[in-house]
Amino acid sequence: GMEWDDDRRVTHSSLQSWMRRVRVGWTIIAVSGVKVDTDDELSELIHKAKNGAVQYEVLFERGDGKLLLLTNSVAQSMLFQNRVQLRAAFALQCSIEKTEHRGLTHDQLAKVLDYARRYSQSWYDTAPATISKTSGQPLHMDILNLYHINTWVIMPATKEHKCAMVEMLCVK
Image (cartoon, rainbow, N blue to C red):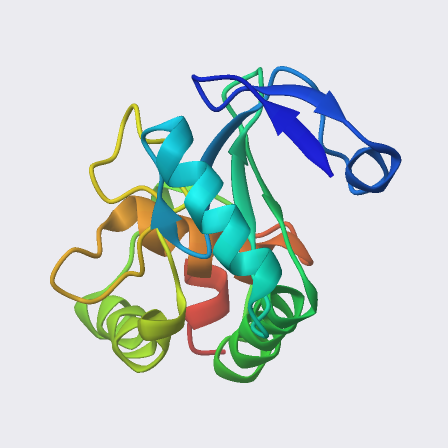
């Protein structure tokens, strides 16, 4: 368990929470994809989540402004599934040495957008509430932007090979 103040800032992290890397000073942003703005909203959502039969996740903004998602098995499964889907859709195709030659073509961008149309219904906005009106909420094509694509497609697709996204899209 953990405790938080009226500003949703963690004031105590029990052994279980601490082992899952939750730290004092972090701010709770969302529970199960629902943005929380008040202590009352947070308490209600945590109570419902703990007493329900469904799994849940808690999104934190760390003290350094970065985000951490405290996940349960369902959320971990979702993140794993996203990585599997990315590997199937995007494989390292080539190496482009010069940065100035790494521009995307229309067809390459269309492939990324097609992927987003297919899978974005299982994504959520990971940005902190201070910079995003949709923080913690499920994403869909009407609100999807480059920051979301970066979080859910570009960064995880390119992490393993430490490459540019265009190198995952180019023709050999």
